[in-house]
Amino acid sequence: MARPYQPGPKQFVFATGDGTDHHVSVGDAQEAYEAFAAFLRERESETYTIADEAARQRLVLMPQRGVISRVRETGQEHLTVDRGNRYLPAAMLFFENGCAGLDHFGQWFADLADLDASPETRGAVRAATFTTEAAAIDEVGRIWADSGIVDPTDEYYVFFESQDVEHDRAERAELLHLIAFLGLRRVDAPAGAAGGEVWVRADPRLDAEVARWA
Image 1 (cartoon, rainbow, N blue to C red):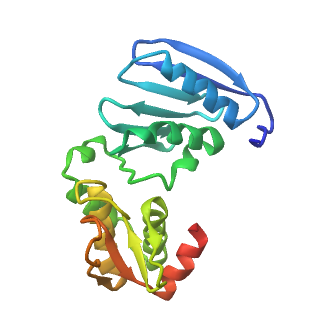
Image 2: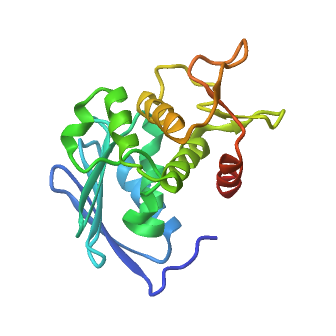
């Protein structure tokens, strides 16, 4: 059962690009999620917005463009969505913890124009924003938590498990830059592994980070 909003109930405004507004008052994040999922099913639009006006925060979903934006008083950020099943999970995270709930959801960029760059360029730009070991390890952990496993031998961490090279290209490029920055040891994937997998030898820093995300 979802944790009730305190104080509650909480108000959200759902909107589409054509100006349709729908106000809801909900007791918890799950109730908000179900209300938004129903709102989404009943409409077809280029843009869907969830507004928490009390917190002055918004989440904007743009499925046709493949973009999610989050907006708060400090500014706005954007990320590219490579998979269609990412929009509703993003909404749930927003209902649970606002914009901060999406901190680890993907590669956020302040400039929407950055999303037009190639995935490899976006990955390199994102990696360059992590200038300390602690921050870089945290980001590597986020990437692993999204699509990684621990090899049964416990000797390797596998990123992008079972994916081909056309999936998550930006995050793969980012990961490779962070591996080099941190001095981690990448190894060849075994025969039969998917072409997009990245195998990294276990490292004490990774061990601690993966334990936090597992």
